[in-house]
Length: 136
Image (tube, rainbow, N blue to C red; front, side, top):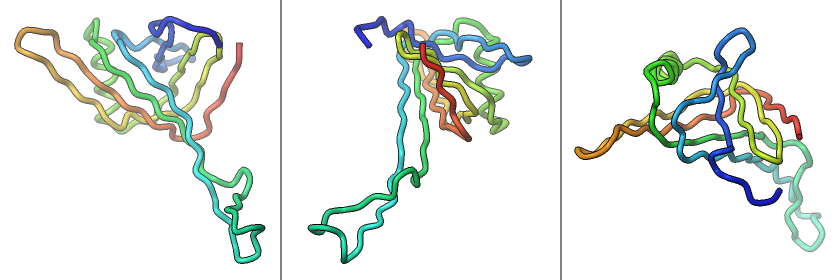
């Protein structure tokens, strides 16, 4: 993947009926994949090197972003999803890479603002089930 504009990484929330809407005003975005390991090292491990069990650890994806809400509807949708603890479908489009889609839960929603600036927000999401990937 070559150099890309950061604004082209899109975070989309399920709008119902199988359609997704871009979460408004995200200025910074981060998508991370993690996989825990299962250590099966024992006294017979060659040279005392750690051994891992293939495909046995828990995988997860996390997403975070910060920005401003451009309209009341996107603010209300994010706030409602957080306070209800709902697990909804989300899409994350990465240019020249593909689309990640799956169930996510908002785990943090923070608002801040300076007396001479706009109100900003930060949001964090964690995967809550199997996440799919479709490449470009």
